[in-house]
Amino acid sequence: MKLRSCAKTDVGLKRKNNEDLFFVDEKQGLFIVADGMGGHAAGEVASRIAVETVFQSLQTSDWDNPHEQLKQAIEKANRAVEKAANSNNAWQGMGTTLTVLLLHQQQAFLAHVGDSRAYRFNNQQLEQLSDDHSLSGEQLRQGMISTEEAHSSGFGNILLQAVGISPELDICLKHYPLAVGEHFLLCSDGLSDMLTDTEIAHILQKEKNLNTRCDQFINQAIAAGGKDNVTVVMVQIDEI
Ligand code: CA
Image 1: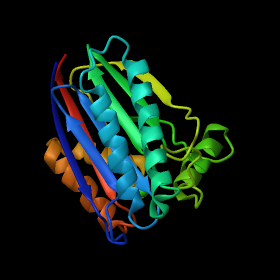
Image 2: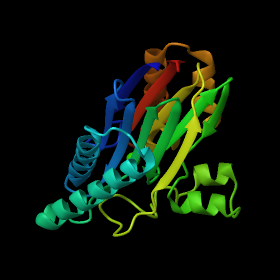
Image 3: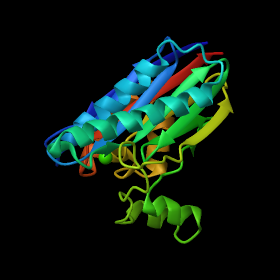
């Protein structure tokens, strides 16, 4: 498999700290976005512990069962963040989203918890692969609100589960066959809250260069208010 990737993060305009974190390992085909939460900069600690735990537990993996291995790595991260939170009063209640993409043997494996998103872009079409584990995401799945209402909902950021906070995680696991020329986008809600899917698709259709696309995502999220930390990871599949 041949792939290219680009990743960027920005603190945005309103936050003092950047609690988002990305991890990219092109060789292994492993890509992670985490969006930490918690007072006293604990969100930064939560996202760092979670990402480190996941990539360390997957480092020696021979991928005989990718979904099970991704699931176990996220469960391990859940315990690690919770343990750290219990060890320090300032870190109590901290947690993080985790969106993990593994590209292996002509397949894309997705594992995620929270509302950081994974999209696929192919034939000029954008498709959200992940479910938002948020109140508005749940209302959307149940048909109670429309996509537009979900996007403008004040409940969008209320997470139904997060790594380090939920004793039992309901990890979303999906897999897809890979196609040459398709792209994956992982992002924190600092992008998806600021830009609609139509605006995200427009950047992907207009810009061909990965680096320019990532810059455009960050710049437009900031131009739209930059209310939160914004993180994007883009992967392009050149050969499978
Ligand atoms: Ca966020």
